[in-house]
Length: 340
Image 1: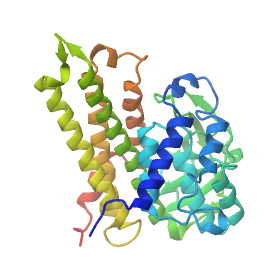
Image 2 (image 1 turned 45 degrees about the vertical axis):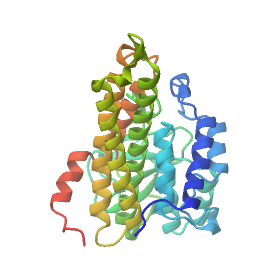
Image 3 (image 1 turned 90 degrees about the horizontal axis):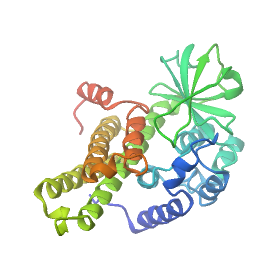
């Protein structure tokens, strides 16, 4: 079985990467630190116009009808570029709206006119609504709905029903975070029959972002090791540096290979959970290790906030705590049946 991306898939990912590099340069993460939205309206509209929010949605609501593999390759590019904004929640919310039968909302999400925030309750709810108590809201500015996703629940809630939204400082300049106190909230849309599959799809998409981070840090370190000179020669000739770069390459390749396998397996079937959780766990380790090594290889400059190396460290930390941490995934994998 050939698990490598096809020519068409590579072209989709390449076009997305070019657009993200043009519209979302990493320098804007810091430049927009004081703005309500981490992503500008212009950049969001450009991404929506190219179809980045609707790759996996049906064509009758403005989607491209692609599968998980194409979405995963897209999110790998989002990770490479440290793209800010509610991409994950909005893409998954489009699937929830379509599964719930609201084609109008699905079409609006695909068009980029209905961005969706991400809501993380402190505890799991009863299945038909979020649990009462504290919660965390991400990237809510300009959104009317928030996504709640767990292995047993996939739903949208109205942000107007959440009460007071109290912004808090995020470690990641590309993610806006707020505290909310959840009461007895009735979801506006639910997709219980699709919850398990959408949760696994979410794990794979987060893993794809982490793979992109691991690869971007590897590439940045290799470039620096080739051009930075000490004592008249590039630092890359030193074993301590070249071995670190080689280990980063192995980490990134291992995570990418597992991501491809999870994407090819899909978000349903007997082995889907095993591969999705494994992809997230492996990608988390690769991204966090490579981001830390990237700091070290860049030396004193790497530890300054004026340089962008720290941004990868911060995004990797946020993504680890999105949907399930590495330890949580490994714990679940232990109890899963061996893959067929």
